Amino acid sequence: MALKLSIRVGLLAAALGLVLGAQAPKAAAKADPPAATSEYVLGAGDVVAIDVYHEPEITRTLPIRPDGRISLPLAGEMDAKGKTTLQLQAEITERLKKYIDSPAVTVMLQQAVSRRYNILGMVNKPGAYPLAHPMTILDAISEAGGLRDFAHGDRIYLIRKRASDGVEIRYNFNYNRVSLGVAPQQNIQLLPDDMIVVP
Image (cartoon, rainbow, N blue to C red; front, side, top):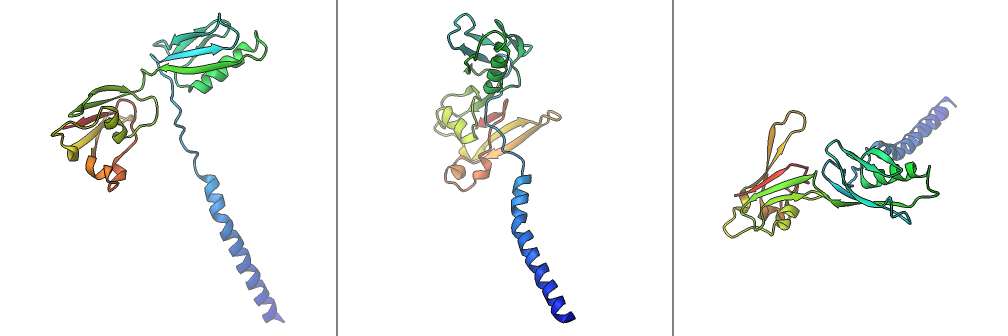
């Protein structure tokens, strides 16, 4: 009897282990951090177009001031820096509810100035470009009109200042290898103030 009982207990424990094991990946998946948003974060110098439906006296295009704020009739002064257009839209809508029934507000990025990257050297259109949406090094080279003749595609590099201490970090990029899909890890996503150098 004791032997049968121990066998039953063993089988029950094994079955419980299988059930818990099957559930473990789901628990781990829930613990994963949320994916980073690709929405543009507004900064000083950016220009936003604010449209309030049927309210032409409030509708206007505004630059974000150096202090990161904007001023809108009825809504007043508010921080725009550090917000996405959707977050700013929600705040303006909430403020206007005191004066307008069900305000329909749309905020659009008109001009991206605060977030930029630079590409220098042997590309067809070197210069500073707005970083208005997620871009990689390959995207940046394409945006700059591609490589010029005699460019050293195997010696391209990106310089990035580390936010914590300002130390410059260099990332190598081989155009041919990345284009062929051999080294996709080199095709990193750009951050504001990155500088790409094409020798």
